[in-house]
Image 1: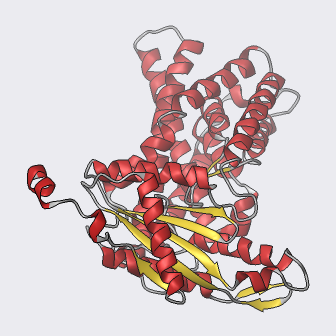
Image 2 (image 1 turned 30 degrees about the vertical axis):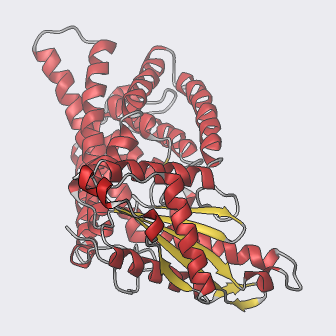
Length: 438
């Protein structure tokens, strides 16, 4: 599949690279996810039963089960208070899966579905996502938890039918099976959104989720089972103590991850961005895929930044620019700030210069559009340089950074706009070396 630059549209969150025929299907996919997820949650609530293991003491039935679901929902909401953004800004990592797993094992599909639906809300959604996108996310997660709860109950019932002794060992087995089903369904639903919105191939999508879930799924499953054990063996307050300790560690880890982000713009730091470019260069050397390195420097920013309100208005422009860049890339791409008024973007899966230049021109349009500030509308220019990662070439991150930098200065000398890097005669390999390589 050949990527193309998306046309201008009404959706400000649409990435600059898209497959428009797929993007047109995204509203249908979202609507189906909402209807199926909420429908499944309604059915299990009306026709299902809530096990006593989820019940909270000192409450009368059926409110004891509702109180138990409320407790696990509060645990999950606490885990969603601190988020870690993915490199593109689209994806975020929150800490609520162990609580969903625990509720799913203790309370079956009903508890798992409701905790998944309610406990994964966080403030970012209300600020950055349309209501139907947030609803689809929660409905899809509830559907995944319901199916996981059915699988967990089925595994426990199967073990009982085989004459295996019950207890925590069987519950661990059920938790493992249920979590696998939950993760697979959740991943499949999220992958559908990414494939439709970002135009990724199945291989690219699997690569994204492999990196995201490979290191955490087992740990979160075991942690959810530990919550179950402490709830059953000690009391409802014991998971609260465990959760407080784990959340403290999670927030420390999240704070560490935030060091890779520029505080003002929310973009990757130069060091973190260089890591992403190095990964893309490695995939290019292996012949897997190409990419485009886009480097831009603002023109006329000094006049905005040195105005009567000192640097406050300049900071507003930089923060707004960071938001624009984050919204313009896919989950596989990256945007970073080198420092001052210099920014970088990485678009993966770009194989030809024409697409790379078209992307850079769209970036130039985003950057130079007016900014609403406390001192009125402000506008800046931009000089944009483009360097292409060609599959099969022996390119490394410092080479690509230098080439994009040279191209940017070429654009600046021309008065702004976009300039693509091309090798000079001095950098072209001698004919003998080319023949020998062939």
